[in-house]
Length: 233
Image 1 (cartoon, rainbow, N blue to C red):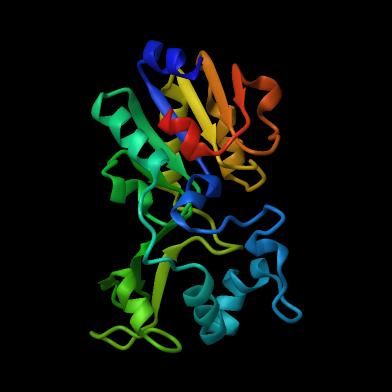
Image 2 (cartoon, rainbow, N blue to C red):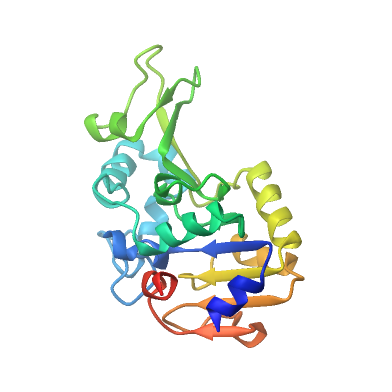
């Protein structure tokens, strides 16, 4: 049935979360074994990955970030590749992703809205010089700009920070204009991203996830399973 919906659709938007990248070796966050179920001393990952912690304890945040948020070995999986094929056919008009791993762009997709940013984009907070992920990986402690010595901050939305306004506007515009919205690999528990579904007024809402989501009762089709397996088929 998913194949039939895709073939009939002219403007598909894919809205994805951490479950899209688990087959690439990147752990998810909110499942039973996810990162956010763990504690680090008296701190939770949400506390560490917050704007206030960044300014108060930047060295500790970067140690955590390098250890748990960067996966340079990760490569696009079958789900990413299937979405690239849909974009080449001009079926897929946009990808709205909560992931920061950059794998959709690595697979070849260009119509990507990374609403929580990307680990591959890092900027000096003083002079705005750009640095790739490798700069963060190779550094120790607080990464510093080669040009001016300022702190290099990943373009990743921390807790307490607002996502980029223009990225969110573009994502909501694509969702509001699509005829089919595929929601996959996300619990829809993180705001403001989860509220983006309110902009959908198209014909088909498809949910692909291992666990139930708040969108299931509104969906045209619900598929329980691994995103990469479903999209490959």
